Image (tube, rainbow, N blue to C red; front, side, top):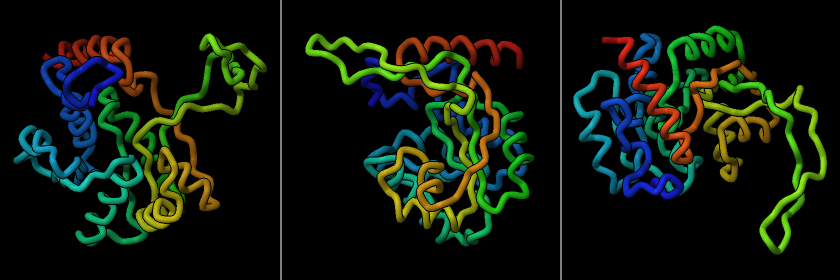
Length: 224
């Protein structure tokens, strides 16, 4: 649910500029012709996605999502395996809460990973000074303990794009991870970092939601 947003609906179904976040995210993936199919994995009890996306070419809704991101991605990979996906095929994993994705980012991802035996992810280099905090005090306040060197720090985004076989194997071995790149890292691989964009941020808070609404309304107006 959209608890941190104070919403009654899961955040992917909140409407921004005339479409839900889910629709914006799916349409961003469909905007490039080289993506053959978009598989939307939702919980078994979720009927909204099929109602919103039913009938669209290259889109399939699969009601087998799990309690965690890794479980949901794993369910999607099993569905793709049943549909004939081969170990060397590319698979992209995108978060519906990032509806600001742009086609140029996808093209950059494809262009920079085309010769990779593993794959990589969109990410943005950290521009702010980064502080390491203590564990907090009884009053809930935290204090800075150290300043981290930001030159090697990146913020992970999605899509994350990997060879199908490697991703399936890595997630099966490391289901505790919070993103696909971490599973590949723990399996001994080094995913490439491909620069994404500031518009591709994840909607988590109400402030994020308002910024994304402004961004998508501006895009919608430009298309008219």
